[in-house]
Image (tube, rainbow, N blue to C red; front, top):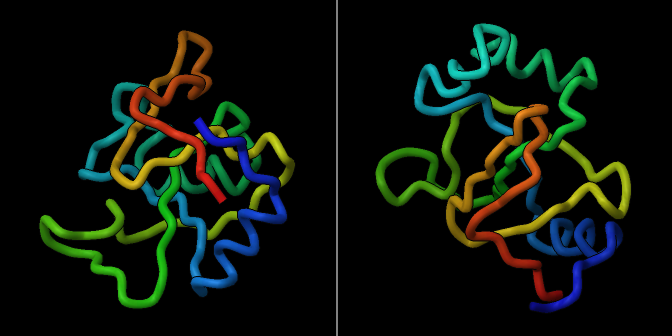
Length: 120
C-alpha cells in the first residue's frame, strides 16, 4: 500500500483536474433510514453542515465530463455538499469504485472494506 497523501497533495490532485470532493445525500432514496429519520434528505445534509458528522463521510470526486445518470455514472447522488479536508487525518481511504463504509456501534464510519490509499 502506498503512503497516505498530504492534505496539500489531495488539494493539488483536485485542482489539476478541476475536480470537487462531494458528499451526496443518501442514494437510493431512503438510504440512511437504518440510522433513523434524522439521516434522510434533506436532514442528512443539514447534519453535515451543522458539524455533526465527525464520525466520517463517504464522498465522491466529481469533475467536468463525469456522468451522473445510468449504470456508468461516476457518482451516486444528485444533491450534495462540496467539502474540503480539514486536517491531514480527514482522508481515511480512497477507491476507484464504490468502496462503501461501515459504521461501528458509536456511529463512526471507521471501516472501509475495499479501500486503498491514493498513490500520488
